[in-house]
Length: 90
Image (cartoon, rainbow, N blue to C red):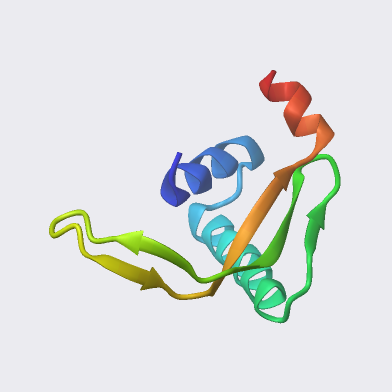
């Protein structure tokens, strides 16, 4: 499901206009991004938790040439699913 499909689905279930739902979805994602950028954890009880994790620099290879290279350290977003979501999927 992509963002447009999510917006349409929520619009149908709430009977609200797609444009209004789209702005709410955009605002929600924006707030999650802001919190992660600040290093804060975003926790939606039962659904899951996003947190910013620092990945160490590591070695790698260029798949075309086979040459060794170093992949820089960087921040990534890590998602851990909540128990309710886990139970729904399994």
